[in-house]
Length: 202
Image (tube, helix red, strand yellow):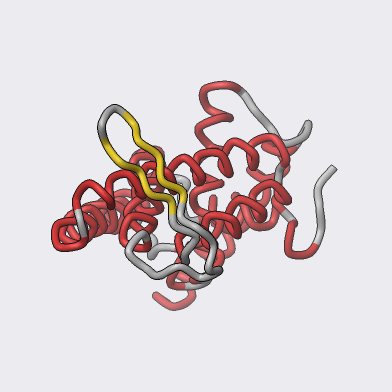
């Protein structure tokens, strides 16, 4: 059974899906969306502690891992909670990936140091965002969702990419009938956009 209001997964997914209906663009986003989250957590590793909690220091295979409860940790918790509320099963997997990214980015950040890490983050973000804009410009032929709803695009994109992958490879649905209803909504959204576009041309 679907949820309503801010946790209306069908509504949010349909909005996102209307901007990502081309198969090539979907593949591009599947490749690049989650790395953006990782690179963001990597640069946030260098932000200061927020809660005056002791840092967790772990030694793995001769390398020191330092977990810091900073902005990166807070962002991870926010995303994790939102995703679990949207869909307990896929959301829990997405939350696990986010926490895994937080730990991995902490390891990479400690290893690289800020002077090298920010260059890696910059290069990674440029590559990932360029790939997505190419996907929209060359294949989707529609501006990215972030231009119409910035917060929704940034918050929901990783979960939607994961849901698309789970449905494609495992036939997963948050609940029976979800995909059929969402596809109808996506079709309606695209038709509405095409009609508006045609009116502007005429």
